[in-house]
Amino acid sequence: MLQIDLWKRVVIWAVCAIGLLLAIPNAFYSKVEQHNDALAAIEVSGSTDELDAMVALWPEFLPSGLVNLGLDLRGGAHLLAEVKVADVYAARMKSFWPEVRDALRPERAAIGTIRLQPSAGDVLKVRISQPEGMARAIEVVRGLSQQVVSLSGVGSSDIEVSGDDGVITVRLSEAEKRATDERTMQQSLEIIRRRIDEVGTREPTIQRQGTDRILIQVPGIGSAAELKAIIGTTAQLTFQPVVSRGSNANAAPGVGNEIMPSLDEEGQYYTLESAPVVTGEELVDAQPAFDQNGRPAVSFRFNPTGARKFGDYTAENIGNPFAIVLDAEVISAPVIQSHIAGGSGIITGNFSVEESTNLAVLLRAGALPAGLDFLEERTIGPELGADSIQAGQIACIVAFVGVLVFMFLSYGTFGLFANIALIINVGLIFGLLSMVGATLTLPGIAGIVLTIGMAVDANVLVFERIREEVKSAKGPARAIDLGYEKALSAIIDANLTTFITAVILFVMGSGPVRGFAITLGLGILTSVFTAIFVTRLIVVMWFERKRPKTLEV
Image (cartoon, rainbow, N blue to C red; front, side, top):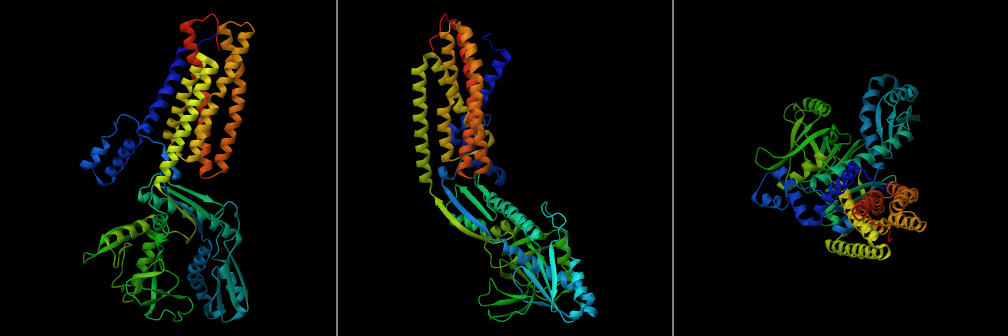
């Protein structure tokens, strides 16, 4: 029988109403955007008359979710960065030297003196004066190894130790290198995301590409140079013992030491021990502050492990200088006056208020584990984005009008029903995009245009089937019922295969391809819903009202 239960009718119209309600804010994009920005600003800095006026631009009782515009529609910056993962190997070996030294010291009677040797970045070489104790030295160093923390390296050791001619060679195992690469990329992605979020940009795209590259797209930002300034600084903070100070940048620092320039004193260089006492990774907080003289500074606080190491070192080295190093520059080298307990302190220097605030943001977000090489950078102006939006709107309107006219001319009243469902369908697409916070790109607009063309396919199948049933002398009610029943399998098959394609594009693709896949996939879901449920409900309601004796499809 050609009938639909009341509860089903209520559910269908409720879904349509909710979807269209969620889509409404996109018709007043600028007002809603100002409203949302003002609410976010009030949460951070409090209410002002100007912000309250912006909040009043959009009613609070209505949804305020928007379809986020992608880089090609809003304009912004695009970067492709390569993470220098090899730097992490060198840092690991450098920081491993104090552990090796402390472990070998009790064995001096058997192995003799211990000296660090010049070596490649990812290798640590230590010479002992009594080669006959090599076996014992290797055993002790191997005792420092740990299991690799990764699923692919279960049971493997993180270091490989060998010895020859009185020199112990320590290097990272291949399993540990793979695990380190994975951790480095994940940490880099997270820290870049934190730094960009601190700036308050809308819906950035931050994705891993390949083994050691990261794609960064930030809509609404001024230039690629501005984006690089936000994320390009590694902000690697270390606290290192000072060996000496001078003006010769080319002096030999000695094994285990390094020379770094002073940030504030031009022409001055510090010779420091390479192995830091504490690093920025052990920071838990950093905030802009002022020193005792009222000058901008940055206060910091360590975690328990860093606080203990920091406190022990200051207690044992009162009267000695202690360098605070940021990105290979000594920003301060104060003399330790007393034991600093509690794990907190302050970084002073010739900072402006803005510089101290930015430094605090970088330190709080965390240090990038490795440097970045920017392989590709582009700045897309907002004018180009506006042109893209206009072109997309024209394409959607032309496609929309063309389909509406074709359906009405081909199927008359039934074509009009399909057109109503098509309008609802487009509204549902924007409602879903707003609800999930998806980003609309130019390929995404292409996906919507394609969906508009495909949306009526299901109705065409149904209407053609109804025509066939009418020709075989079926009554109007029976023809409509059979038309939907027999076309259902073809509708599901056609849309299911397309939906699977959209899923594959989303999983395997990136950037614009994923934008196209999202709108195509959501468009298929809404198209099937409107074709199977909405159009059928409209036809049933029309039939119940008119009770036609014959059908003109």
